[in-house]
Length: 186
Image (cartoon, rainbow, N blue to C red; front, side):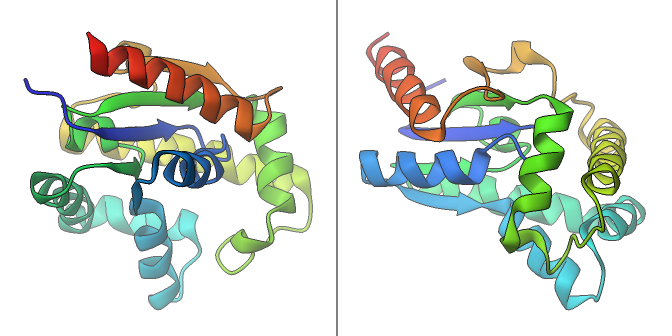
């Protein structure tokens, strides 16, 4: 399989995928393809929070397949971009595949304090946010296994795995760039 100059950033909820993708895009002069933005906009358009929409999509797998198909199609005619998507590694296997992990307590804190999430995730406490993140994780895992027979958290799917719990986004991006350049050379 021929390598493409595409980095797929996958990972756990609130692990820093979006923030790190933006840093990488700026430093590498890459574009960004973000499935999560599309998913959230569909949820909002349908008047659902993201967890309810996750359940809805499980019952309507054609939506999920279309989201992943769009990423695959985009990669056929584009290069030099970041895919910010849970299954970006699956949709574009010739990309440099990165998985970001994070402790659930840190993830809940990050998500709760992220004002951009309030339109589709508005919780009264960090504990409510944590419970929702755990529920979404399970819903996504079930859906991806049923539809694609894959486990997104299986670290063998990736070229690089980083635990972002105690890291600054810039340090994560720097690590990815270093390993990405090595990957391109081999």
